[in-house]
Image (cartoon, rainbow, N blue to C red; front, side):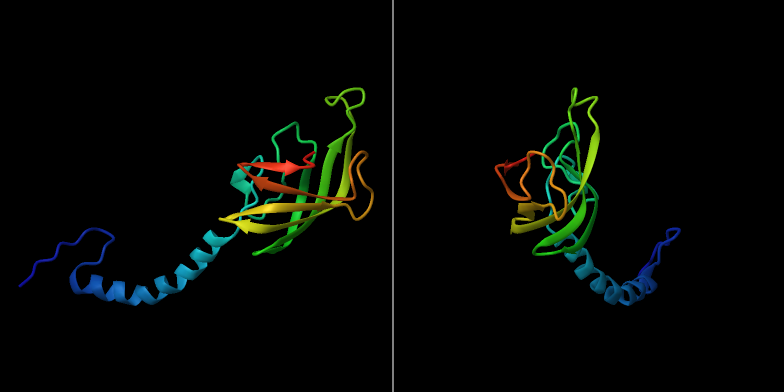
Length: 150
């Protein structure tokens, strides 16, 4: 007759096999959800830890100017659509003392390569920050963004 050892908090022998069999369907159902979360594209910026549906995004690491903040994403799969505010400052008399300005912004990300979005469009539906276009696209390649990066 086989001998089974019991450990605190663990099932032993036939009870362990029955418990595992009972849990197997639940575990099988959990796998697709985990796979979906892992399959979500990333938007790589200065803070890659927040690369899936980030609440803020800056393609470069700087003093924070040019950061899209308060982002809310309506879509995040093959492409992403979000809105928020574009943070910048006047740099008058210098960037440390300049006044902060916020502009409504829409972001559209697409062209997934690997697990990353590699194209991002900024659009300003209202006022446009001085010196910037109403809309522009940047592309991610070689571990950095290229284009009109603010």
